[in-house]
Image (cartoon, rainbow, N blue to C red; front, top):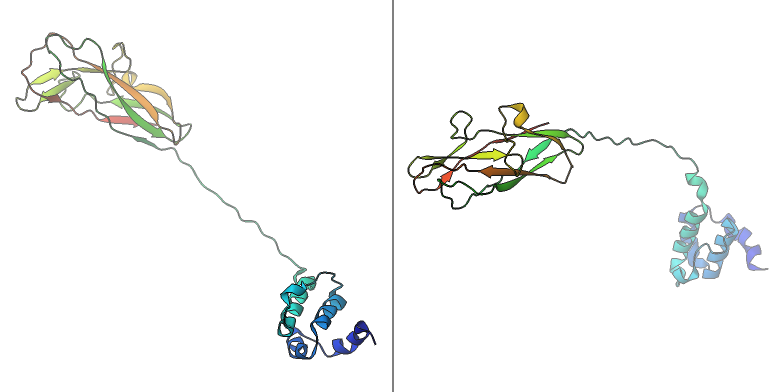
Length: 216
């Protein structure tokens, strides 16, 4: 009687994987793989190199069961995951320092000093920038104050390097307009400054603080 003919007898004794595990101790490795082939018509149900001992025959048969028993996962159910996010317009502005260096108040500055500040806004957000008249202004005249003698030195801030466009805030027309946010990339805003000639001021270090406002 050939091996496959004997399988009818073997298969009557095997109902579940658990019973196979009890039974395999009496069965050769060859029969293990013959049963795999008989049950699932598999040419390569499980590689024999994984069943090097008779004691692993149950593992080989279990592997074959998992490979062949596709009816256990025949049904599926589907759904949809919706993912949402909201981006709102927002802006942030950095700080900067504008340094005139050493000057003669009687002569003023021969050319504009300048500094840059960075403004970061949500991509596509239009914005404008205003500079206040500073902490020591007299009317609309910006002034720096001496550190030790409380004297003042007048100066001005401009939107252009030629010094023709005042950079202010109290008057809307003096703001820097027409800017658009670049997202993660900051907009670099140039600020120009000058000191008018004909002033008298004692030797000292002069400074002022100018708040920056971004409108968006």
